[in-house]
Image (cartoon, rainbow, N blue to C red; front, side, top):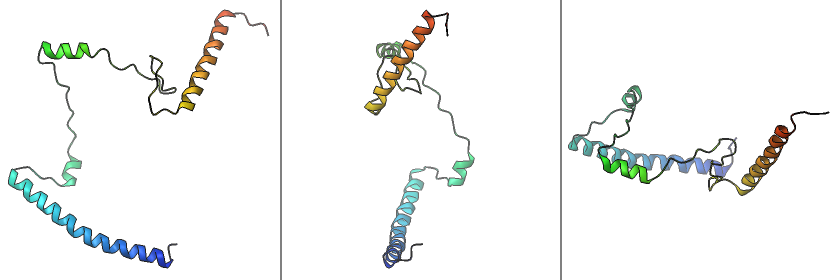
Length: 127
């Protein structure tokens, strides 16, 4: 679809840039591989990395009492937020949550609270 003169010019410029920056990138990659071989780092192909199984990282075990004191001073872990409302048990929400959505969520929680309270009080429904 791109048949205009401007699009042809843009594509031509991109081809030129690809060639020019390709030479620079190749030179930097070759230099990186040479530097790695001098330091004794094993360089692998992408195919080798993909075939290998990822190693699981084991959590570090506490070495002594110092680590235990630090973990206890930091307090309990973060209270989990419900996925539907994104509000934590403490009643706070993440900073990135839009205020309008937060306001709507809190209003819906209030309505649901009254509905549940009404159902508990009125066990007999006369309709």
